[in-house]
Amino acid sequence: MTWLITGGAGYIGSHVVHEMAVRETVVVLDDLSTGRAERLPQDVPLVVGSVLDRELLDRVLTDHAVTGIVHIAGKKRVAESVERPLHYYRENVDGLRILLEAAAAAGVGRFLFSSSAAVYGMPDVDLVTEETPCRPLSPYGETKLAGEWMVAAAGQAYGMATASLRYFNVAGAASAELGDEGVFNLVPMVFERLTGNEAPRVFGNDYPTPDGTCVRDYVHVEDIASAHAAAARRLVRDPAARLVLNIGRGEGASVAEMIDIILDVTGRNDLAPVVEGRRAGDPARVVASVGAIGKELDWAARHDIRTMIESAWAGWCLRHGRPVSP
Image (cartoon, rainbow, N blue to C red; front, side, top):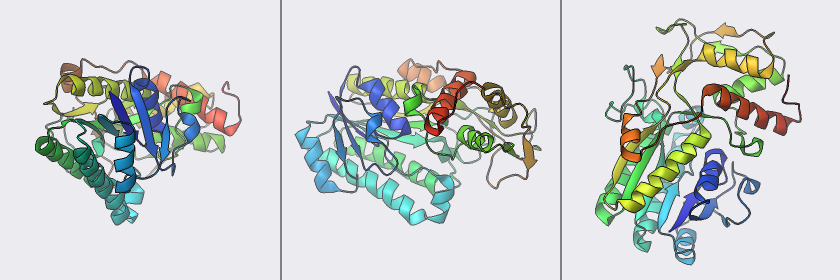
């Protein structure tokens, strides 16, 4: 088996590459708009380019005799997708369509798609199952749902084994060098505030949750990577697979709880969080049901929240030239 991993030089993608390259032959396609070549193992070839480039895709699939694809490349900032919806549809939907066309033409038999819990929107349930109605609230979420539809249709039409993996809130790092360089999720956003000697912000504390702050399902990026490897193995074993699965821990943590742990890990308990108004579109609770992925892939998350935060903080400190210990 040879797997093409698109977006493999990015934060999540590089973790998937490191996980899968232990057992499989892997090649990476990345335009390096947000990825870094130095994230990759030295023996993994990198092709710099875009999934929008059909000629390049045809050449890569043929030259490397690719038999399976893990598609992680794409734009993922919710706020940016609202400002630039057509850009997101071009990158995430058109890019996926072109990749699937190239895969079908090359006879690739397995396709694993990086999706998102953003497809659910604001579900009013304790645990979000794969059968929970999908009502995305942003163009980003819409592109991920449309992507799932395309992957499923292509799999049926062209005989590909397929899986769409819906990530919940990703955090942490396998090593400091592989940490998340973006500042668009809760953990790095709090790190940025603390680094600037500013109090972390809480957007709303009047939600119908135990402490009034939003509850989310946080999952370590190493667990995300191991879930991809498990899904890839399933697609090899089962040519008829048509999977749509949540990746989470099945446990919720509130924003207030997360910030408390972050302050403890970073030694900044002197900076008490400040409460600001709610952000539009933030649901009170989004926590994954993980029964299906346990059944289908015999997989479960292994890392706890403190481990996520400690590993993420080590990466942040490395990039910002500061000591990890408080």
